[in-house]
Each structure stands twice: as C-alpha cells, then as structure tokens.
Length: 222
Image 1: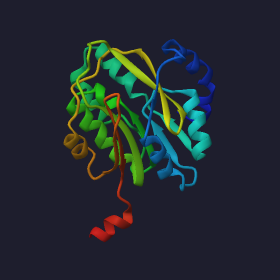
Image 2: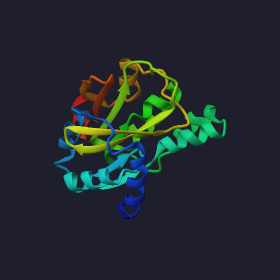
Image 3: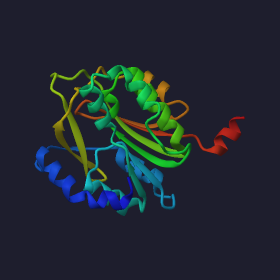
C-alpha cells in the first residue's frame, strides 16, 4: 500500500478507530523511542507496519522519520483463515505472504501480531521478516508474558501518542491470544537478528527491539 493510499484512507481509519474509543487507555512505551532513534540517521527509510492502518501513526512516523510506509495487515489474514477453517494452512501462507525483496526494508513494526499465531506460524512469519529487513535495520515487537485472562477475541490498535506513549484501542478479532512465546524461542526464531533492547512493562507486555547485523559486522566475524 502506497503512502498516498494510506492518507486517502486516513479519515475512514480514524472513524473505525473511534469504535475502540478515543478514551481508550494509554500506556508507556520504552522501546518506541529506541526504534525511532535507530532509523533517524537513514535517508528516507522504508518502514513496514504489519497493520492495521492507523492514520495518525502514518502522520507521526512520516514527520519523525521522513519515511515511506508500507502496510501489510497480517491480522486480516489470521481472521480470514479462521473464518475459512484453514488455520492449518497459515504457516505455509505466511511463509509466502510478504512480497518485499530481500533486504529492502529499514524498519518493521510488528506490534503484538505474534501473540495471535501458533509457534509454526510465528516461525514462518519471523523468517520472512528477517529476509526483507536490511542489514542494520530494526524490528519492534511486543509479546505477552502471561496467558490471556479470558477467551475473548480482541485485537489492539496501537495509536502513537508520542515517543513515550501508546493508546490501546481494542477491536473485534476472530481469534484470541495464543500461548505466550518463551524468550529463548523469540530469540531463536529471529536469528541472526540480535535483541538490542528489551523492556518488561507493567501491563504484562514485553517490548523487544531487534537489529539485523550490518554487512561490516558479518565481514568482521568472517
């Protein structure tokens, strides 16, 4: 999706987000500022958001980074597989989901997408994200650290308020959160990316910032 398409959808998106309530709770984020700092030195970086589209986020990242933003709403893919009774096909689908070329994206916003897929699907998606991330690129993701308290199926739109705060706007999902991934599994499935920052928040979310080693570091290792 192009930047112009995102802006043309901004008004509709903000209307949809209102269903979750503009008075939804706001929580601190410690990793977002680190993510932004890792991309600030890049000229017109390419940013991939795993969705859904949030118009105010498009504006925020555009102003902060002067970047081009692509959105691939993987949450909709999960819903479709649930609706069609094809969850067993999700890992294979995700292994082919992203059309971006290898090493073409500077930054990736995963939000909490990995909380809603099984381990095989998580590994398939992570492998694709590693493939398309440029050397020295950054990836930001959130992971639950505890099992969901209820079986309610709800996604969250993360609306950026500023560098230190995110508003959590819930909306209906076809599938609830799955069993939390262990920290060692997270690190393993994103190899060779390296965890550079990790923050455990009071709302039982772990923010993780990963970086892809630069070409020069690979050469030094060789």
